Amino acid sequence: MQQVKPWNHRTVYVLIYSIFVFFGITMGANGVLWAEILPALHMGEAMFGSLTLISPFISIFILLFAGQFVERVGKHHSMTFGLIMLVVASLGLSYARTPLHFGFVQALYGIGYGTVELSVNSVTLDWERERNTTVMNKVHAAFCIGAVFSSLITGQFLGMGLTYQMILQIIVAIGAVIVIINQFVPYPPSHIEEGVAGAGAAIRLLIHNPIVLTLGMIGFFTAFGEGLALNWSVLHLRDLGATAFIGGAGFAVFNTVMFIGRITNNAVVTRFGVVQSVVFSAIAITVAGVVIAFTSNLWFAVIALGILGFGVAGPIPTTLTAGAQLVPGQNSALSGALMSMCYVSFMVGPPLIGIIAEKTTLHQALYATIVVGVCLFLFARRLASITQH
Image 1 (cartoon, rainbow, N blue to C red):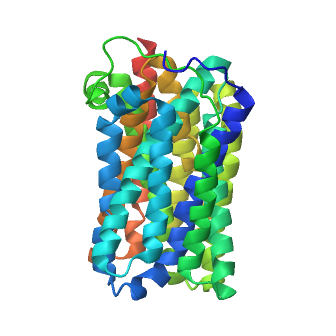
Image 2: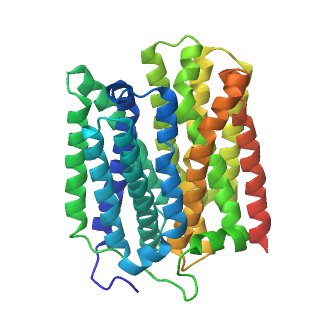
């Protein structure tokens, strides 16, 4: 038991929600600002792509091996540390002047994202256990809110003449407020079973627990599908003749439907169960892939993005909650194991699709969406088979 102070479930929920929104704000804003930052730092696309791999690589390492750190210092302190790293990274990016500075900032982002991801998901699982209810889908939906809002408002700020440095410093101020508030909010108690702590606990779960490995693979393919949309959807729409506005609107459709899917997925899981929820997602992703593959119509492609957003909405938060129920008492290690698989997917997916696109076309490379849907369906059936025993 790491936390003995009285805690208020509403206050903790609002804090968790705010952290996920801030998570989305940092990623959404940076996605818009890269176009301003690259020429300012005299970086080409190749160097940019290589340096941005630093962040997910460090995050994966933290998710797999930092469980002991979280258990030792407590989730409250680890959350504070991660949030401070994100604030410092945004501040550092506003002052970066060379690619070397940019690489250092990416390392700070990796530390921050990995530590916050591990801490906030683990605290949410503790909250669900104490309250005997599920909110993981709802709090993950907050990420979509932050990403959509920050993408839109960042574009507006740039149009008003604000520099990317000013926008990053606004993000720093928002993060600093959340860091301060976090100091005054006691967390729910954290229960850790004997024998599951220590460095590498997340890897041991993935290697030795078939349930965790299966849930991790569900997260891997879901994140692969999400990465397809995040990295390639606007480029695909532009190839089909979309204007910059329509391309951005199509991306907004994806994020909006994903938000709606996460808000409603709790009801789907309650009514049909975890496995059937993942099956529904697999069907939606496969349908989206078929539409993308067999039509070159711009508006059908936008509709496919919406279907894809619904498909990738639910499985990741659902597997986190399901994992905590099926493998209790290991929330830190479980969060690290499952989210590390998602980060691995985000790291290998974009370059893989890029290589295929160079050898063929981007349109043909996006046939991978169908493969993602089929694999997700197979691992959903695998989960059903394992849990029956």
